[in-house]
Image (tube, rainbow over the protein chains, first blue to last red):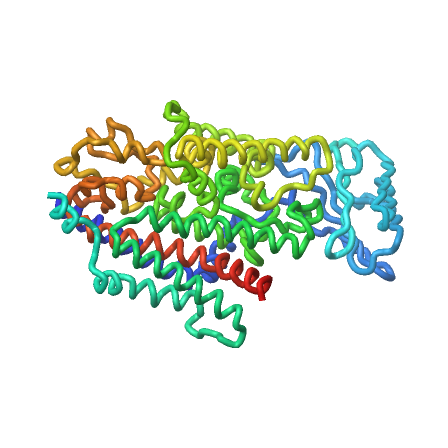
Length: 152
Length: 383
């Protein structure tokens, strides 16, 4: 038993040596494999949700993302919808948004991109308020806070 | 008697030490130069040469003098300083400040570090996603590569990661060596269980709020890396918390106690690495036949991992980070690096050589990028 323990210990130690030697040259490959694991996705709370609709205008494109309510296990009562304006951003953004595509506008948004002054006017009770409004490397992004109510 | 013990110890002759350094020399050369040294840019070539010489001279000295911690800590502190320098330099180049903005969060551009891992586990299990605004695979400090690096290191080194791989540990290790004698000695060792409480708290709060709460509110190392822009009362309060924790646990308490107080009393990653200490093949062993119970090792241990009871039982606790400070302090070579399964007091040199190679290689290659980058920047400033 003592001998088996010694052999097992030394074998594990040498395996560790091999692991460390191959770790750095193989880092790119190992990382690529890890990135394919099912949980290796940024939570939509940070990533902003999938793009649900693209509206192309003359100078820029507006990406309306899927509303994010995702919690740890089930959906939460509050969430947000992210809007990304990509391309050449005008001095003033003015858009009426129907984020759930039910044919009824949900809010009106107005952004002065020079001063960052943003105003949002909700048209129904699903829209809670303005979350984030910021310039980004791709243009401008806004998050509007929402309340999940199935009866609206 | 002392001479006999020294011969039987870990010191080696000049030639033998060189021979032991040769594999490290070749492997670090390959990693730092990619096998093709480029001398077209003088400052780049010089930075690589200095970093290469630094790691290999330190490794040679570990074998030649038989001292481990004395030389480990040099690279460990340099790693911490150069990593912070590189991070701050990059952030100032990209963002013109050390703080990140809402746009950086929205675009998932925040560098990922291993301290986020404890908070990732529950959300990854339940919501199949990562609650951190970083990059999965691309760019600097991406989530996948950090997971691989930490995963392998904790498997191989256990809590040794905290003394050989953590790029923050060098800060409190450095401050804990500022005084010759501690000003504050009587700290209740029950506090060493605190990281488990912090781990539980941050894992649960992160799962409930879907926010990496330790990074958001507590992490003291934001003071030397990056932090949220102060734009509100909440962000100002966060800044107050992490600056206070940095000052208290990383600077003042380590300097007063000569212990690594942040690592011992706060870090949730340390708690996870403590658990993985059970898996690693390497450990610290106590040769009870050689031990005179002088308890010098207990006195010098920076992680509260050794007690008089541990020495009497001949076993180190799971909190050990294998820094080697106790090994260096033992004049009888009674406490030594060992491999699990091998009885204490046997194959001391073999175990130490193998552990040093594995742990030092990890630190040398992991730290090389930031050391070279810092040297390169400094050389550009000078010339």
